[in-house]
Image (cartoon, rainbow, N blue to C red; front, side, top):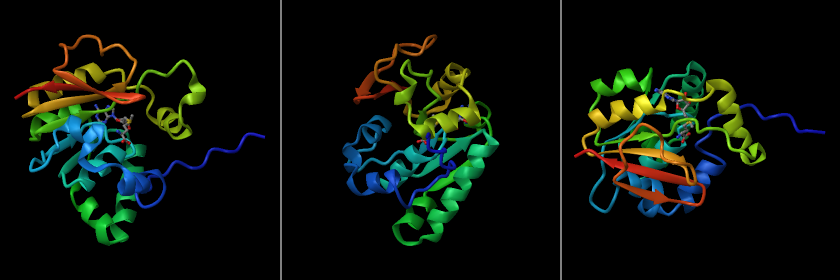
Length: 200
Ligand SMILES: C[S@@+](CC[C@H](N)C(=O)[O-])C[C@H]1O[C@@H](n2cnc3c(N)ncnc32)[C@H](O)[C@@H]1O
């Protein structure tokens, strides 16, 4: 019999996120490099598609100040709850959460009002052919938010407002997002790639 899906929950303290915090590889990780974190350089980051907050948490754990933007009421509430529980844990979790500021709204509207060095965009990707490969959690998020069909407009807004760069997280083997200029460089992992658009 199929196991019932566990309730979707944001948990920074246990599980995959906590594991990555311990053993993830610091500023050498692809996401950190793509966002421009290196020794002596810690950009101010805006995560325009906050989702479950995992990317933001990782970046904040490396010392970056991160503004998270989420437009789905449900995802925003899950994230606010996860951040509150992690802050209550105290110690390093509280420190990390203190570098994360969560906003609710559409990033296309909010980005022009904010100032950030690097903007991260990780839209809901087009469904993969082999849906069995898609993690249960990701399927649950997709059930809540659908697909982000306006992602190209969001990238265009970000390109006008990021001081230093816009980073688009995208499936490693997918074609570049249509309707955008060529990216400045790419950082490729096994399943994910980061298309980096330098703006300044
Ligand atoms: C694939 S998830 C992001 C996962 C996230 N990177 C993480 O580490 O958990 C995409 C999220 O971005 C949100 N989103 C997409 N477009 C947005 C926009 N224009 N403004 C605000 N949130 C947006 C969706 O509601 C969804 O929750």
